[in-house]
Length: 440
Image 1 (cartoon, rainbow, N blue to C red):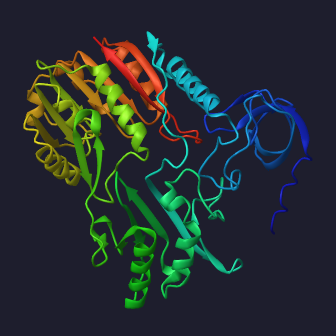
Image 2 (tube, rainbow, N blue to C red):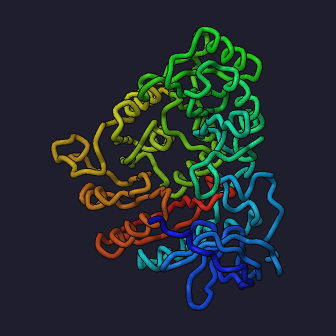
Image 3 (cartoon, rainbow, N blue to C red):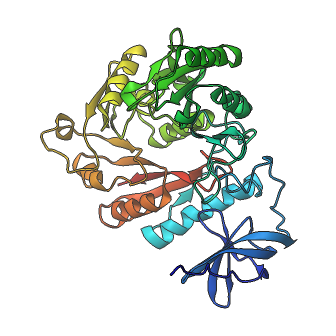
């Protein structure tokens, strides 16, 4: 016997109290928490329920009755439907305040620490900034065409996008062109994804193909690339299967001009999505760490050498440690490319128990930088004082694990949290990146 669908409450007026870490307004109605898409703190809205649960409800704004002074008109026509952005209706300066408040909250609540000073927020251009993205592709029979872009907010359907304001314009202004090209392919229904990768120069598009394209398909893709300025690659399996179409192979790279460093990378490699913010992030990290000619510096989760190589311009020696052997190989090549001989790279799983046999664990370091994934750096924290690290810069993409690790560093390992601040790597989203300075 099938259950009847749950009847949703009628629309109701409510005052929005705060903004959640996901960018939703929060209110309480009859003692029950309600998360409201599209609402801002201090607003009175008429909300429409979208989901009722035992512990909390979900809703969306039907009408703003009294608007926040920080509310602005979203630039993107698809905002509210597309899940790529959560905060376009909030003034950029207010977005930064929200992210700063989020960092302050987790430091106090989870880390039980407070920075001795707050760093000024790092910001850069907030539109057309994304040079790395994974776009979904799907032919929708009811619409009679293919869609290319991000998924809708809180469901698995692709949003019907005509353009994207946060992607680099080379791609963001050509979503319909990409979709039309895929529509013309014989393997139209077997292309689930396009990945874009850009540095300072050309844009590579990697088309994920679940069925081999015909010569005619490849010709259409090559024509797209020539007409629109893309380099076309295909991927028919794992990462190792990525290959350029004939004549499309290109060397991707980006520069860190303040440190006279150029970093080459493959389309599948991890690079920061926001190139200008990355440059400012590297500058700030080096300013905080202040490496000098007497310093030996350890860079954990070093990737392609984004921090390692600039550090090597200033320190006596630098050691980078990374879990991905391919990234380590390319980091070594980048060191040679930049004429840096005072840097070494090692492969090690930094989220497992470290072996004391690893040569770099036998060295002493005056300073360190760590840039871990969302899961944080818990497994390496105890090593830092053992290796002699007196000053540490922690670059974080997830404030909750930064706060957890700060608790350990400060309250158990004897470091002081000297400074911390947010970085707006992903404007118009609720994603919070941050940087912290520790000393002992």
